[in-house]
Length: 227
Image (cartoon, rainbow, N blue to C red; front, side, top):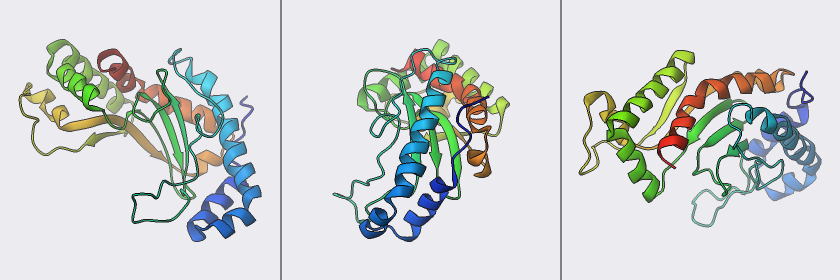
C-alpha cells in the first residue's frame, strides 16, 4: 500500500485559487494552502514515486524539493507580456543525467485544478541533441528502433506523441517514408491526460507508474540513441 494517499483538498483549493487570484496578496494570505497542498503534497509524491521509477530506470534522478523534482511556483516574467507572477499548475520532474533540466530525458507529471497529465521524453533538443536525434532517425538501425518504440507506446494506450514543430524537412536530411515524419520533430515526448479525480485517489502512485511504464520505450530510445 502506498504511503501517499493522493493529493489532498488543499492542493486543489490552492490551484483553483491561484487561477482566480494570481497576485501576491492572495498568495501570501493563502501560504498555508501552498505549503500543504503544493510543497508538502508535491514532495510527498516525489518521495514515493522516485524509488518506484528506479524499478523502470535505475539511473533516474529525483529530489523532493523545489528546484529539484518540484517546479517553482514563480513564473519568469522578465521577457513575457503575461505578467502574472505565479504558475497555475504543479509539475513534478524525474530526470536522467547530472543536470536537473526539462531538456533531458525523463518522466513528468503536471496537475492543474481541472487537468492531470503524465508522460515522458524530452520536451526540446539543444543544437547538439537535435543533430544527434536526426542522425538517429535516418540511421536504419536506430530509426527502426524508434518506430518500434513509438509502436509499443501507441499499442499500450491512447498516448499523444509530441513536439512535431517543423513543416518542412531539415536541409540535408532524408529518411524512408515511415521515418520521415520524425525529422519534423524538435523534441520527442509522449503523454496522456487522465481524469483529475485520479490525482485525488489513493491509487495515484500506481496509476502514474502504469503510464510511466507504458511510455518508457520512447524515453529509453532517447537515452540509448540521442543523449
